[in-house]
Amino acid sequence: MHNSAHKRPAQPAQGRHSGSVGQLDLPTPYLLFLGDVTEAGYAKTAFGLRDWAPDKCVGEYALPGATVSADLPRLSPTDAAAQGAKALVIGIANTGGVLAPSWIPALLEALDVGLDVISGMHSRLGDHPLLRERAERLGRRLIDVRRPPAGIPIATGLKRSGMRLLTVGTDCALGKKYTALAIARGFSERGLTAEFRATGQTGIMIAGSGMPMDAVVADFAAGAAELLSPDTDPGHWDVIEGQGSILHPAYSGVSLALLHGSQPDVIVVCHDTSRAMLLGHEPFPVPGVGEVIDLTIRLGQRVNPAIRCGGVTINTSALDPDAAAVLLDREASRLGLPVADPMRGGDRFARLLDACLA
Image (cartoon, rainbow, N blue to C red; front, side, top):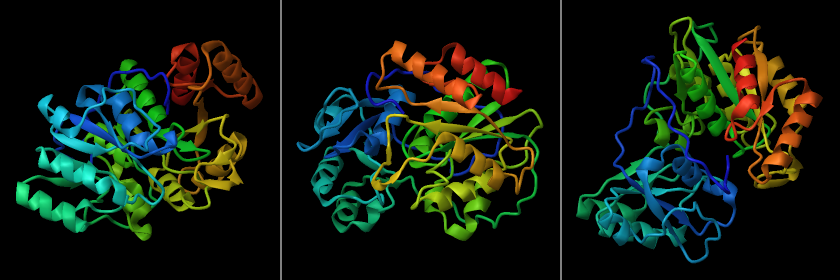
């Protein structure tokens, strides 16, 4: 969510709920690969791991054309391996999730010096002949995180026990994961049993389990969300990471399936007031928060008539503290809801947690 002066919050406490799917055994620590990325919004995997799993990150490695940094030590694969790194993680989530040809020499270099390679892209590492041959010859692992489990059921739409909160967005890459992680941590700090449920590649790398929603066959997507958050104790909270935006011309299908499969009791809408047009889809303006709230509730009532909005989070990383405070308070007054930046925390975020639990 925040790409400038980052903080390093502790990872949220995990509840005792046993519904985790897609449990992963990833080799750590990581060297984060930034490729030749020039748009910070496409480096969200690197930023997410830096901010929520800092103990697993030894440094970053970028190609000469890159203009984005995660503000970590800049290391070559050889230097990272010498400092104990076990894997290179592709820290980019670009449009379409494709492996760029310009990255391949760097990935081969990582394999050559003894690192495994971890990817959250749609393109499978093992489908690239050079990578597959090199990994097989050197005994290295190519790990694709964006791989859903087998046997996902069709959704039932039936009500399940337990409590659920889903973060939803006005666009992609503006804070749904960060908000869900911060809320899960906030609930746990209040003594509640709460668990972050990852639905994208970065969240899965942070949590160690989850469901890569945008890699699930469309007919099974709502069922995948049900599988991610099954029946549980009445007082247990699953805090589910949202994906895309229900008004996004490319990704709304994933968002709607996640909404219907999650059956959330509470939604929190995530927004970035500095973004006027959709990331990567500039002909389309970012929809308003109120429009997203109204449409999400109307569609979510199909599976949970009691669905409600607990509040709004706004990415204020580009603002100084005083300007951020003015913006958050102004939006709270306009919307009649708690509005906070989860990475700034404080009383505003506490009020948002109160409203979610009310």
